[in-house]
Length: 157
Length: 355
Image (cartoon, rainbow over all chains, first blue to last red; front, side):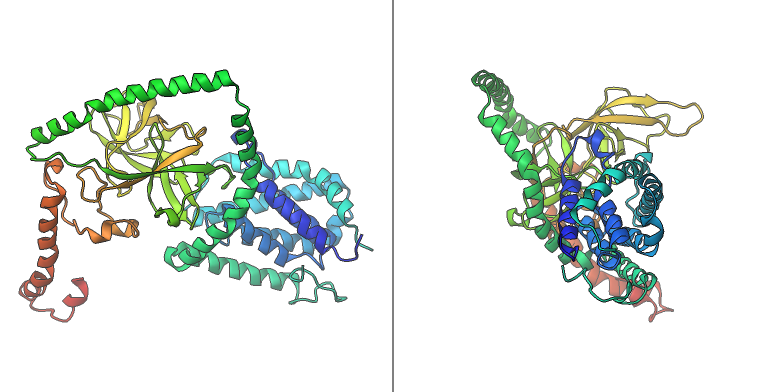
């Protein structure tokens, strides 16, 4: 276990990106959680010095390159998630996982709201209520995901 | 990971407080979004991005493709034979059908008073495989393995064996995004084959449904009516099958019918599609009325600005080009002479308005 989380961050981001791109049957793809956003949020909370808004912005730009209707849309939304994580990391980090899941639900809903607003402004609207489903599935997978990521790197505190 | 790491003591040492840094990144994002909305400015960047992302997409797709390959290579002899038999039957049916095609084309030309049969609309086809990848949740898009290296251009028509599939969006050197006709952003100009009534089929986000929201309540529509492309809009040639109307809700107080059609194309199960190049002068080719919407097509070379006369099938390409050439040469000579006579009082204000 090294002192710098860089390697763990890089690997987890890569795996999350690949899992975001893997094709799924359409009924399952609707519920696919935004794993990359969760990973960015986790590292923003746990290691706010190493991984922060810059990491979030780069990951968002990656999402834009693969999936975004407009370049910069996900970059802004994921940077916002990372900003919230860095800013409130001490308050969120000390909570039990169940309460963290509620915070994650709020953050992911905000993330979807930003995407929804930009989609509308840029003329690519998605008005179906199904777009809010990933916020809930994201909150559900937060606890196992945080547990798995905690095994890759534990900061010295 | 030099880009993300910092080793100094203070939590917020690099680039100020988190609020300041977030504002900075947000501003950069907004600038990029605005640039991307003005298509041509980031077109080059999109092309490069399409090229850079393609290897990753192929890598992600490779397990699925490998599985399909395994399935194919270990397919049982019986199933292969059955497939072979059905394909042979289908080929024979198609061949028998096309036997009469030339005769019908000649007969059609004779009926229309033309000396020679007009060549078919489609000039060239290119099969393309679908790379199975997630291109945005709830958006109806697919990635195909053909790009500018194969001559693919933006807003090119994509079909499968059964009907219209969609059109290309972002085109890279080896790959292209295809916007399916069922995407909420896609509007397809169609025609009801039975009545010739023209309307627009809008994607719903559901791969099995197209909506026809602009049909007035008194329009002649029935369940089972077939939709074909109308040739308007500049992307799809006229007459290609699109779908069949499956539901009609007539509300007594609503001015419009709610009509749903089911696309013929097998949008969910397709593994391969066809890219289509059409002959620009052909009578059935898409009407090029909006050059700004189709910047990379063949519209620029063919200034067929005046709309075709009443029977549009009677204007073959050979007769159309001299007319178009004369029309294109006339306005520059006529406009400066005509303008001063019409508005003699404003000689200064009129020139900016004329072009």
